[in-house]
Length: 302
Ligand SMILES: [Zn+2]
Image (cartoon, rainbow, N blue to C red; front, side, top):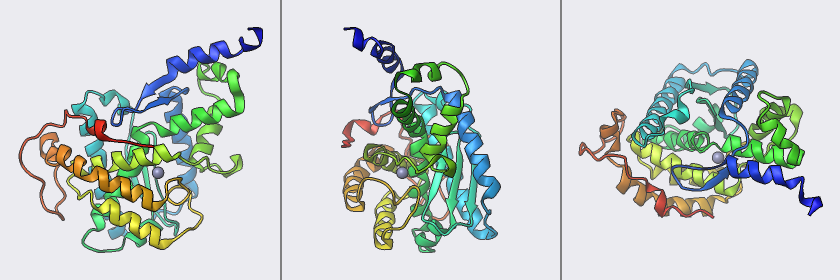
């Protein structure tokens, strides 16, 4: 028995730190306190913005800010209606478009959303531009809402520190946490390669993304055309969108399965939640359907 003793505190911690992703019901391990994740994420975001070049295209920036603001409002509305507003009470949303040709976008925990010009160029200027942008931003906010950063940082900490992570989890701000968050987001080059999101996390973010887009009044079908464009664009060394596990075809299949369920559950939720519908698309139904139904039950990941 003796050789297993080191494991005992870890088991206790794992039980304590196991939480549930509200929109999908998936269990996850979050070892790091939200306060630490927010603090470390803010540092990473500020580091990124210090070196990033903000877009000089005022029109494109306004387009991104408009869609991002509506997705953020949809996230807040969903969490309020489901009694989970505490999850983002310390968020301070910021929306940016940066001059980077990569196909990328991210949302740090804390609500710092960045879209790269390369992503906007891929989407183009068609009639479904804002809907596809909503799919991108919804996906990124989905990672933040589902606390995937915490989950990745926790996995990183477990892998590198083993049972001594117990000390880290209760010690307040630490360099290990900062390093784990930096690695999880791939923004701190000095810490090595990006730890990619897992396949489950990617599909979960896709699902939350189409829920948020639908609540915000966008057409969730655009998530499919977005991924078709990504697939056509081929590979490339991009930190988030192209380095992920599910192939485009498998996530498109999953999206096509989920979209009708999500539309049935959440269309019209925008009006009920007080989220104004986008001016550039058909207004959502004005029937006052409440968003108290969680659509996660029909969601299969795996
Ligand atoms: Zn992702």
